[in-house]
Image (cartoon, rainbow, N blue to C red):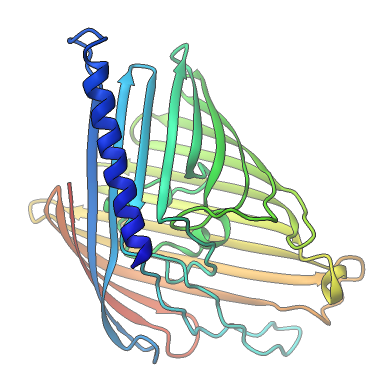
Length: 375
């Protein structure tokens, strides 16, 4: 409750501050070029029928996002977004497939990430601020973004929640996608190519970032190729995370594509992280690989505003000895999730989503129905 009140106070303070700035600034600038302020929001109410004993049947105010953005002129703009509900998705209880080479016990997930039931990992919140950044444009082909934002390497986190076609994020969001604090420089040397370089503190989460005494820098480069404007794009990314006393170092490679034509939409991503887990205790001689990928397709049936959606998601974790490949201390598992459902599009600002999630393991499947409105 305190977090919700604090978020409300922050929003009211921003609105009052922006209003004051606008009132003062309009006296000093040309009336034909006023400051533009945009307010947006999304509310989602979710009903779940799950095989999990901890969930069974329940209603949930899944998300309540409020966004405030502004454009001071053609070169300077800002955007902030808050999550008002403070809710998190319940932990799953899926069991992993044992490795064929050794007889390991199942390994449960640790998913308590807001809006991401199968995201594997919760990375904290800070006043439920999801995004807050300033964007500066230079020379028409170069821009600088500073603040808290979603990493550009993740399609889903860079998609507004009112445009997400499935109710829950894929596993890629939990392990590889974060909202982080830092800066990003984006250049467009050609119409078919964008190059982005970003540095962040690597301490963030699904619904916000946290201050961490163990914070470390993470640097990444992204190439976005656009073979067919407005219809097809391909991305290639790499990211390097530095080691700290309690967190591993790692190298991440990412690939993905989006294709849109008429009512058809296809999206796919693959992530691989090679990491040296915590370099203390029994883990000091262990290294690991995490791989996750998904394929997502949807189609809007003409004339009836019904969108069919399906997604297949695969997650795999492999740990082994750094020098000998010894699996004595390994914790290996994988997981598959198949999501199918429909989105009934009442209008551009309201829809009903009904999804079935078939999750690898025993008694993990669920049916979700979500009503959404946005403005």
